[in-house]
Amino acid sequence: MNREAVVAEALALLDEVGLDAVSTRRLAKRLNVEQPSLYWHFRTKKDLLAAMAAAAMEPHATAALPAPGDDWRDWFVENTRSFRRTLLMRRDGARLHAGSTPTNDLDRIRRKMDFLVGAGLPERDAQMAMLAAGRFTVGSVLEEQAEAASEDGAALPADLPPIDHDAAFEAGLALLVDGLVRRAAGALPENARVRRTESDD
Image (cartoon, rainbow, N blue to C red; front, side, top):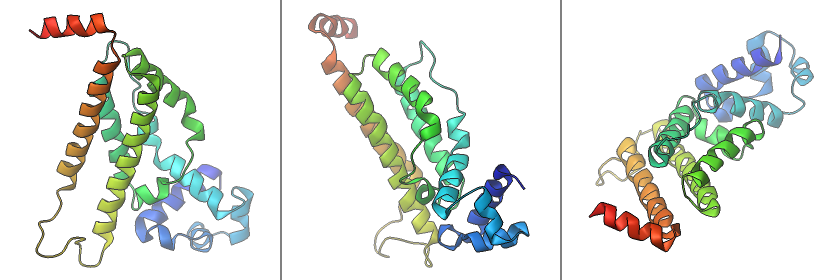
């Protein structure tokens, strides 16, 4: 039994029973080992959950990084969609991820930031855009998964229409990008804004 096998089995347990029911006792039973043997790999349940969160993010963490010449708007949208898809792959994926620290993803985050700044976004705006998109996505998926897990399958009163989570996410993401486009335009030097206006005509 190695660390990777323990994490893989823990994620399978998560998908079956949900985050609240994941325990080292249940995991040890699933692995046919004594509970204390898990502490060889993870000293606490918090350590185990952190490893699970990192492993669950693997599809997004291995997605292609932006390349020179990419349109930053298209990349920003697809990067945020990729994050959402990855969270939705696991039961309670948003809850598992919330509060985790991407210690193994810092180089990728820097490269994404450098790409946005190189595309013309002010550094502070690029930082806040990545943070806002991440938190918006986690919150959206958190609500979607909570609704799916509710007993009646609906989080809204009966007299209100159900939420189309895909459409709501896309609408919110479009608003984020529109705001960034305006900030980016405002950050251009005056002569560059004049040239852009003339080219638009």
